[in-house]
Image 1 (cartoon, rainbow, N blue to C red):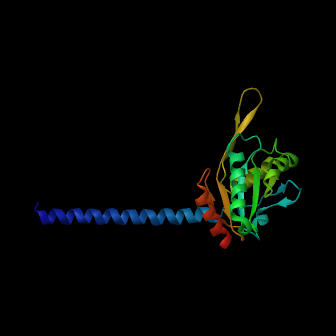
Image 2: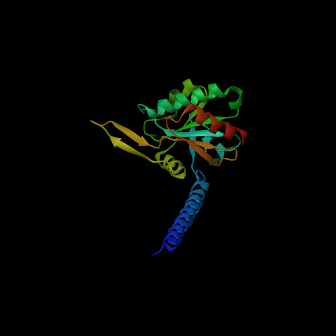
Image 3: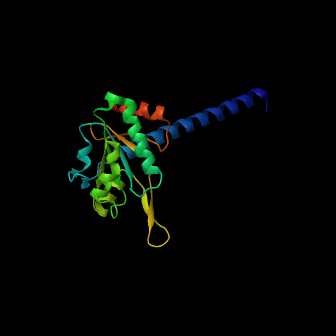
Amino acid sequence: MNLTHLRTVLWTLVAVAALAATGLYVYTTMTRTSQVAGLGQADYQLLTAAGDAFTRDSLKGSPSMLFFGFTHCPEVCPTSLAEMTSWYEALGDEAKDLRSFFVTVDPERDTAAVIDDYVSWTGHVTGVTGTPDEIAKAAQSWGVFYEKVPLEGSDYTMDHTASIFLVNAAGEFEGTIAYRESSDTALAKLRRLLEG
C-alpha cells in the first residue's frame, strides 16, 4: 500500500467516525428533547401547607423552582433550601415573580403542619404534601427517584433526586440546578428563567 492510498483510507475512516458522532449527537438530542418535553405534565392532586390545591397548573403563571425532598433529610434538603434562599437574596427585585415549592417524598411524616414549619424560615418556599399515591404520581411525572431506606429500629430515611427543577411561566420544564452547583451558575440559570 502506497502512502497516498494509506492517507485516503485514513481520511475515509475519519469521515466515517465524524458522521457517526454527528448521527449519535442528533439522535441523543432528539431523544432527550422528547423525554423532557412531557416532564411534569401528568395529573396529580397535592396540597400546599396552607391547604390550597397544588396541581401541574399551579406551576403556570410565574417561573418556579421545584424541589422534591423530606423534612428529616440530614443534608441535601436543608442545604438546597439554604441555597434557594441565598439566590433570592442575591437576585433581589429580579426574583419578585419567582415562586418556589418543596414537595415532600415522605408524606407519611411530612404533614402540612410539619412541612410548613420546615420551610417557613426561608420566607419564599411553599411546602407541598399529599397522599402517598398522589406524591408518587407527581414524582413520576417529574422523573424524580425516591425510595425509603430502613435504618436501625423502625426509623428510616429517604433517598431521592437532589436536583432543583426550573419551570417557566407556562409550567414547562426549563432545566435543573444540580445539588451544590456553583452559585454563579445557578444565578445565571435563574436569570435566564426569569427573562423568559
